[in-house]
Image 1 (tube, each protein chain N blue to C red):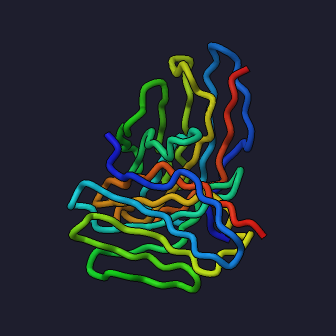
Image 2 (image 1 turned 90 degrees about the vertical axis):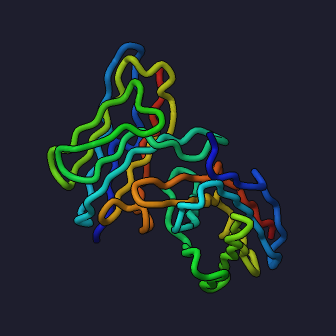
Amino acid sequence: QQQVKQSPQSLIVQKGGISIINCAYENTAFDYFPWYQQFPGKGPALLIAIRPDVSEKKEGRFTISFNKSAKQFSLHIMDSQPGDSATYFCAASRVGDMRFGAGTRLTVKP
Amino acid sequence: DGGITQSPKYLFRKEGQNVTLSCEQNLNHDAMYWYRQDPGQGLRLIYYSQIVNDFQKGDIAEGYSVSREKKESFPLTVTSAQKNPTAFYLCASSPHDGANYGYTFGSGTRLTVV
């Protein structure tokens, strides 16, 4: 049972463009929504996270948009750079339970 | 520097062997987790522990075992009962039970059956 659905599976963006990754969750008890960035051969690193009491959170070039009624959230990477090329995972959690999306492989072409 | 150390980075297992993956953290986190990562399947939870001497099965615990004798350490044993163990294994930790905080991950161990 996949509790967090992530799309697209892969994404190619030109340098300077906007990368958008979408996630949807099912369990309304989830109350913390982080995004992780993973480079090949490395563990995921926490990138940015949001709680459902706000609709948007921005940190530098990274923004999470959150739609509680639709049970959806997305990651926007502005001015995408080749160094952003990595796999991105969304997650949704509640006390004692964190569920991850299947991941999006982002390639930013120079 | 605080963090999570996983060892070894690469591990090869022969058929029928048990192997143990090490995970040590110096973050003073209460909760620790083991995930398995396969291409296109994201992260799947194997076991987790919220306090010393206590742990719970995750979604894919069959063929794996763990122990939590110290707060800093959470080793994972891949037993011969695990029929398809080739994967990338990730250990993580978090404060309290972790659900409302981000996880800190180690750099992973890549296990290959030879």
